[in-house]
Image (cartoon, rainbow, N blue to C red):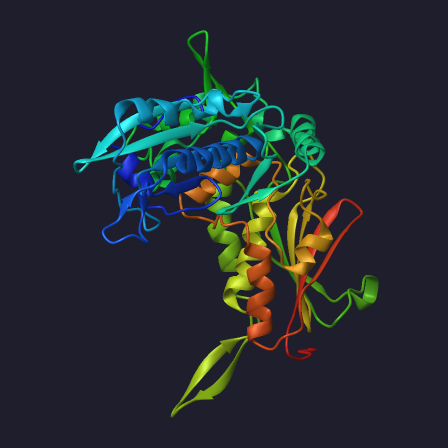
Length: 409
């Protein structure tokens, strides 16, 4: 990020809840009656854990003196102790992490704020290993695995690259303003909001536009910036595709970039292909979709957000067959995510597009809890449907959702 939240924007951030990019830490021991302030060293260690986890993942915001529900509750520490807490990124982490820290008064309650950048190398809590942020959780990962992921991001960082031929006029600033209005920086002038998320950057008095900015907010027609950044939706009459005279494939629609528009259009196109059946619920019949709404929508948004945009020859695709839907996107998995971890339902987070994901998460367009795939499995199991199949081959990541029966046409 190239700018920081101010005192008026902090409350907006607190309403978004915890997730991949936000963590709330109470400074009070609620088990005591009345509550008492936490042991200073214990809170210091919690801060070190979260800051290192953010630095090892995609960066984020830590608010100390805030309850889990986002309610500011302040703290009871002296100025000297507060100074010690704010110094944690330098005193307790190796290498030291340069954070922006502050003390913000919200309704008479002082909140300590840590804005943590993504760090270029693995960060260790002194004598306590390497934390990693996955959704709203802090896990431990091997140093080698964290550095492997960081190296991958340096290699495939397409979204961070500046497009030299683009200028501010190539962005739909009205679209960007509407989309970013739901984020903590939504009240800023649109250029400042875009700069906050690293979508544009000022250099020698000129705005430089990143690929992430163009992917999200380019003026239409936007295909000149990326010919395959959209989503195509297909219907197959049967369980397998056939070509030639036996061709049974119909392209039912295409959602072109920018992503801020394509997301909604792709949901509509795919949603129109989800069949419904009627089931008796009490005295009334209700329509039941063949796939749980959360499952197919989460798979779709994940495909759009996490795909490899360096690949310019393939699009994100949604294929509806008689017995299943397959959602595919170009790109292999990014460490530490593995197929085994996804299939086992464990928390997993890894993205080659952290700036795009941050914007989508802060705007409410996608969840940032790191458990989307796990919940897809859970939703399918709750409907007593077959568990999804996940494959990663030939440069494609594919998730397959299976329905109850065969709708052969």
